Image (cartoon, rainbow, N blue to C red; front, side, top):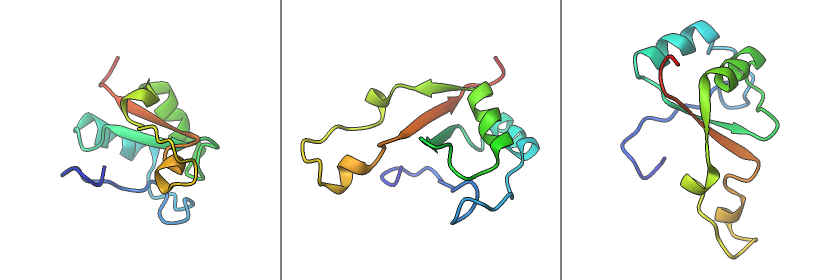
Length: 94
């Protein structure tokens, strides 16, 4: 994400507990094409459970082989990136 010109936002703020993003706001943002991808941690993160549920119900899981590069060094920073995370993509009203 950092090597692109795409905007990135953290849902839930720094600690993940800021309820600024509601399902209604998320629906509007996806319909306008303002947001398309969602990276959720293995534990679902600490953002709103209703927002997580909306993502799971309205987005498709992206196979990790398409976005998570493998590395041979388990101790490297890259080895921990993506571990326990799932990427979802919104593809419009299905």
